[in-house]
Image 1 (cartoon, rainbow, N blue to C red):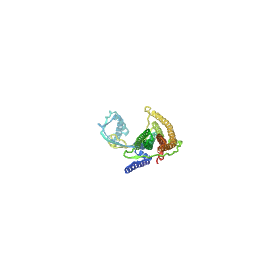
Image 2 (image 1 turned 90 degrees about the vertical axis):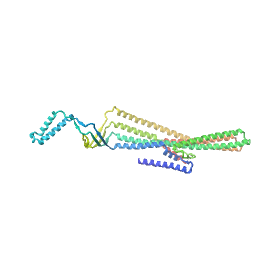
Image 3 (image 1 turned 60 degrees about the vertical axis):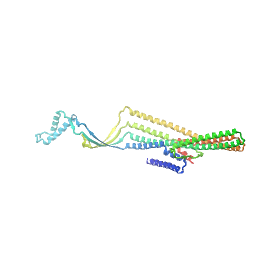
Image 4 (image 1 turned 180 degrees about the vertical axis):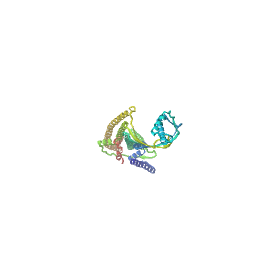
Length: 492
């Protein structure tokens, strides 16, 4: 437990230092600071409120687990109070008349034994004196109630109780608390995986849009240059005026596409900033590009990892354990509860009835009937156990489908990117040739415009395919419970 707290403290300190360094460097340089995807992920882990929420839940379950250990130890209580009675306590002598007669007989017999000669009863034996007095006292009318002259008194007692046998209830409660703690840990990991997947997706979107904007800018600059060339050609009456109009339309379209993607980039950056929970006053930028890296993906290995590390399956395992312990708790209700107890009484002389100073003993309790509540609760927990088992079987199938679909998507995006590489190179060469032919007076303006649009389309398709490739791999690694595994492949 101490190691868990120490590791979390070190991680929080490292994240805080990273944020301070970013703020310090941006303040000193007065410009945007590039944040790598690994740094962005650390900032998300440190600043995200949902992660903080689940961290607190883990701490809550840590102390619940410690509290469950206390059920094995004895409980020690100090009881104290002050009592005031509106009138004195009365002893109902009719219920103790026999005891009073017996007490009077014993006192009388003792008196005869001590002073019999002096009062002329030397011949009377102690036994005869006792029986005679008891017989005479029994003929008297009932004694009046006796009052205890004490209407206010303090009470204090120290009591200790130690459970000896509870039918497995204490052990089941401890295991249940342990399962809840593990569930909280797994839920925290699940949330961190979701945040990591969101961060990677938004980071990649910003990088993609930066590259798309760069491509749009290249096309816009090329269209602007082509328009200027067309203007000179029209002025020299080499080309008709409608050619210039077509070039102007192409420039306007390129400008519109560029502005649209600039807006998308700004929105994507805002979303990324939100995931990192980074203040608006801290400027930052992401990597300018991500290169293609071919990853070897083994489906069977990925599936095995998913079965071992997927948080959903881990949560269901803990739910299964909790269902087992809930069933054990219900079974324990049909067993006796046995506990040892001890009491030390204080202020004994102040009490109307003087109790003994010490009392120790063993007590057993078992329920005989409570309206069939325990039996029905036991049946309920048996069905809960079956429910969790069915949920586990269903989850395994869904995890298999999730891994398989992301695996196929990643492979398809990889093939798409590779197929577009040659297309982009050809489109780029086609644009160069048509631009050169137009500049030499051998080509048409429309050919340059078409070549530019073809290059732009193929280049953006390739960038989208690369982004889709890494997004699919990120989703795949999230599906197997290792979202951070993609980070080394994306970092420069």
